[in-house]
Length: 198
Image 1 (cartoon, rainbow, N blue to C red):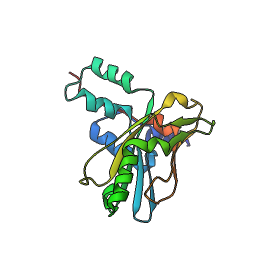
Image 2 (image 1 turned 90 degrees about the horizontal axis):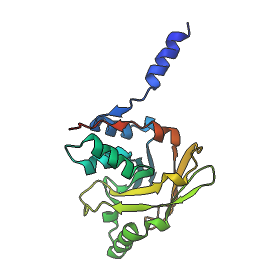
Image 3 (image 1 turned 180 degrees about the vertical axis):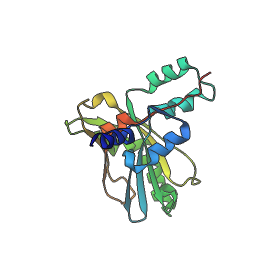
Image 4 (image 1 turned 30 degrees about the horizontal axis):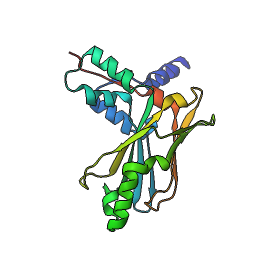
């Protein structure tokens, strides 16, 4: 009598291999999948989201990708962990709510050029991976949060690691340090994007 229950559990736990763009975004945004983390300190909300390789592939491939183009771009962007880091205050860009030009200027310099001094990735195997690259999305105060795309080299993390942790040390928002943990199973189970190939 246990078989129907086991079959239902198997079907519910199955993750699709590919999803269309909007469904993939919904999958990523669902906290049940473990790919978005959030901490709130006072008015400041810090959000860290996993960004799968295929979203970068899609952005570069354009509207009419070919199989060869998708495969090539997957190879180009593969082997990395991508995350978007967001800071918001009352659904506004945290960078533009400081009310002090000197502090704003200092934060802007840090977010533009020195973030690597404050961010690192670790695993339970003792791996420590520095920020490989990052870019801040300059929206000049018109977005709901100040966002950055961060890149880490996945090859520097032991393949046996059950989880990774991203450490974000205090750098000017007066919010303290943060540690965000992601289970590697959740990262590897993330579906790929369905491409409308030519």
